[in-house]
Every structure is written in structure tokens, then in C-alpha cells.
Image 1 (cartoon, rainbow, N blue to C red):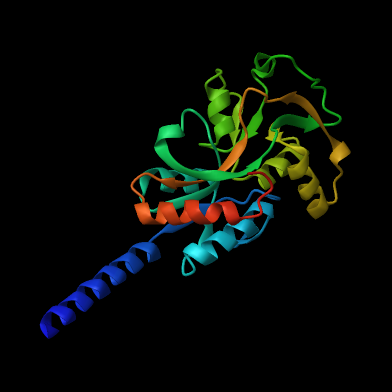
Image 2: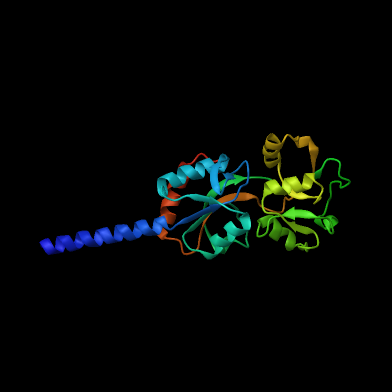
Length: 240
């Protein structure tokens, strides 16, 4: 009986150690997308969504750091590697079966904007922007949306690392149009001194659902998925 008890304790310890190791190896990735999540030196430091995600991970994964990366890299890691958590990701039909969806973290409207003094005027069809340089992030939902409608890199689409640098390139005249919204512009202008009125909307992407989600990669530990789903409703997110 004593030997059996010792053996049972050993098995329980081994199982606990293995579970701990799996959770320690979980990768959490996001991008700098102020004001939703704000990163500095590859680490998350704030944001309306970022703060709530940190609360969640402090409960479920207290030892794991959130890594802030360029979107294309973060997305590729989540696509290829099990036990990876990613936010804030737009949920689209093309992505539906490629990830496990935990919950909605925010909902935004995406517009195509240009400088106030630009000769470009509001358009009725995206086809009117053919041949116009548009700054986008590779593997972004908006980029995929535009590619599906005939836009191409090295023609209209210009690859940008993040939203902040996209705004900078627009101001410098290196691109003519970018996807953005009022919240992003307001935050950018607080940091740089510009005004929201320096920009104008020429098209609203009503066809594209802009629901931001917390998601995990396929093959992720089922117990972790259950924990995330159990704790998620407790968060105070912009939209749930």
C-alpha cells in the first residue's frame, strides 16, 4: 500500500510537471495597434484591449510574456505553431477553420483614408482606387480582402510593418491611402501633434467584418482552451 501511494504521488507530480511545462511553452503574440494594444520594445505596455488581455493571462498564464511583433510574423507563428495565443485578430470566413476562437475583444469600423488636401475624393467602388498606392500589412485581413478584389503588391499595395509607420508614410506622401479609423487616428495624433481633421475618409469597408478576436492555434492544449473560455467572460472589454 505504501509503495502504491508513493507511486500515485509520483504520477501526479509527473502529470503536474508536464502540464506546467506545456503551459510555460505557450506563446502569446500580438501587434502594436494603438489604442487597442500598445507595445514597446516587443512587450505589451497597455491599450484598451491589451490591459484586459494582460488580466486574463495573469490568471491563466502568469509566467508567460506577451510578445509584440509585426503582424505578419505574429500571424504566421499562430498559424504554424500549436499552443499559440493571438489577439486582436479579425475573424473572417477564410480564417474560420484555421484557428480556435475564444471570444470577441472589440469591434471597429475600418475606413480608407487619405490626407485632407489629397485630390482623391470619396469613391463608390474600390475599383476606383486601382493604380493608387495603398499602405497595408502583409497577412492582414484588409490586405487579403483587397487582394481578393484584384489589388496587387508592387502595383497598388505597399507593404508596411505596422499601423504607426503607415500613418507616417501617408503624411510624407509616400502612399496615398491607408486603412484606419477615428480611434487609431486620434491616438496617433495625440502622439505626433496632428489633428483628426488633417485626414478624410474616402471609403468605408462595410463588406469587411471588423470584429477583433482572441484566438488560439489549432492543436492547442484543450485544458488551456477551456480555461481561457471560462475566464474570458469576466473581462471588461470594449465590446463582447
